[in-house]
Image 1: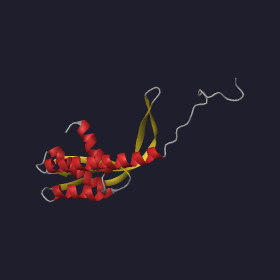
Image 2: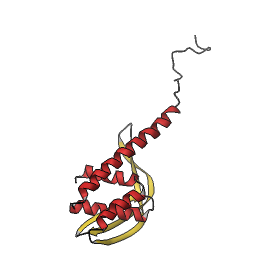
Image 3: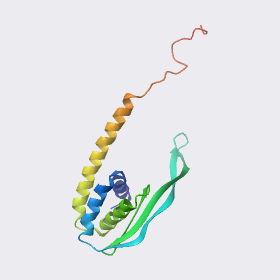
Image 4: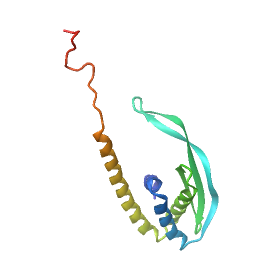
Length: 151
């Protein structure tokens, strides 16, 4: 899995409910030896954003996150996610290790992740649609309508 796929993989898992991530990880834990190398713990991560005018990056601030590292049948996996859900980050690390090890269960998990991503996209579009209805359009002061005090 390349970096782009890995980023997509973690984005899907980060937005998924804990129960769904746990269900996917359970499929690996039932068939493989899982060892926790680094217990889940809280940490702070810097939030980097891009300033749109000069296209430069800067750090907006810090955010609470949690991280964990595991080993599944000899392959390491790690996860970091915003918030403090220790169970979810541990399950995400198990799934990362499984994909790093290229276990046979990964094909089915990948298919379920793609379904989950499609559902997340539909939910996001529905939410954006709700916000679009409340969007306000402001006229510029330099509009073509003349003001009374200007001829």
